[in-house]
Length: 393
Image 1 (cartoon, rainbow, N blue to C red):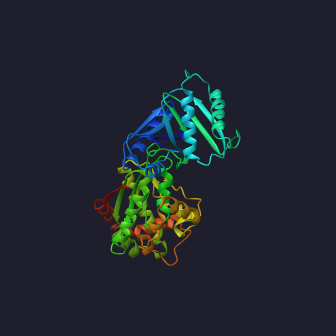
Image 2: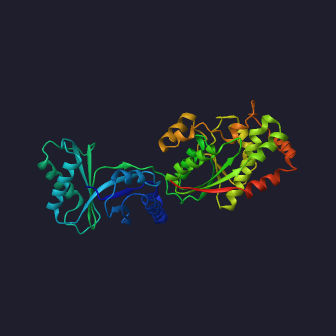
């Protein structure tokens, strides 16, 4: 029975004179999300509202699922819209709507009319009272409750009339692309895909870099990361995934540096490489899945040591999360089952038995001088031979 959806947003509504920019971005994201759905849709703005009108047959559940992945949407309202054929006809339509959506007809309700078209012969309060009277006559077992109704029946009087009572939750946040672009350091673990999702929810377009270490990490490990990028791309749109062959750099660090500092020094070179790609692709910062104290490379001291090599800001949306909280988000967005597949990434392969947890930046710098002979050439080669994969849902 539903042929349209009213799209509700939250934060966009407080953007003042720039609100139209965020609305336009949201419209673009909705159009992109619906491209893979069966059917044709008209997405349009009117009088502070965004509507999705189906212009052909469509799969209701499929459309809702795609809309629920669009950042910026706070609510999705399936609506019945009809032409204005007089108030009596509207009453018949509303009564039929209630019968189809709430067949037991034994609940409390409230009518909330909004008269955007001011030449309509009844004002909002009169519509509420007269429509409530018609519903009570049709369904004597229903009752009015203006404070905590089971059914909030919304009627919007515009050029057409929109009727809805169900609000399905959206993901919230801001439309992707309104917050700039960032470079995500993506591994095959649980944390980094969640970090990408969360920063994208604030409107940031995501690119990603993955450090591959063949033959120590397999092609299955690489494919796992590509699959994770594709899952995150359901929410963010296409992700440009830069795959860096990190093997020679890791082996050289392993050969020249103290083993308890391997993780920190490797991480510093990952950040340097990721930042170089970020600058070339006009990203405004790096994004990681680090959480304070989760592992040795994520203590406050370790984060200082890795931050030190970066000029761009490093965004860590999970910094205060514990592991269970991260797992819960990963399960919600669909990355968890892929993340726990048993394919090692380059960090876990080369981890020391007793990694330093309070690295001294001056000492780390001094030990990095052991790499002076070849490291610049190895980094240059890694960047020149990187592979670009476009990950799409």
